[in-house]
Length: 247
Image (tube, rainbow, N blue to C red; front, side):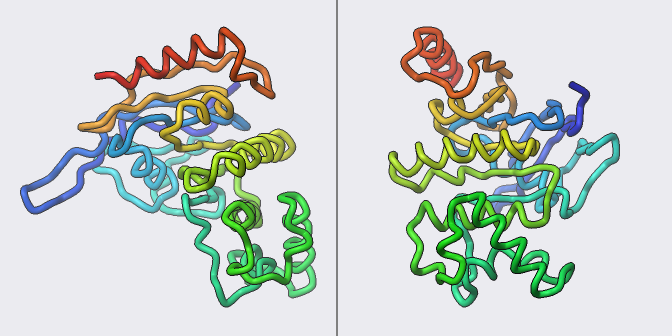
């Protein structure tokens, strides 16, 4: 597969009272079109900062991001971001939230049709007219995913979107997200600190380490979908990932 997204020698500093702190150091990797990769690492390893740089929400000190060979340094509709919290507007219905980012592109009727189609995809068609306050945590995150898909981005950037959910809901959303990815063929970069989640979702797993944030290892995930956590080879790879968290 040809490289679709290229992250080249990204370094990032944050300025604090005691002077600049290096958050990311010399980050390099490529992503193929349609690939699902996981950025895995502990807190404060720069996973979210890197995702925000790819999204165009943060600026790096050095290095560049290339999309189809063209440098990008600002946010754009070809990249959709899904955050850890749904960030739905409480004064808009679920359907209106889904269409909010594209309401300037289409007429009201077509916008409504797009919203209904996306809510059908994420299993929320019966809640189109509901308010965000009427949704469970898992349902709200489904709505956030539908909203990100509304602009038909080339890339989905996911910042631990299932981390705040209970285990049962998280497992269900992981399964549903995989089905969505397989049907849409979107390129996805999924940030997580959960080894099991990275193994369940990622085609490749990029292990990051902190102080400063850097890539320690890139591990191909050879298992076909759906993945069985009880498979002995799966358990072996899980141990390798756990060991990679050590300094």
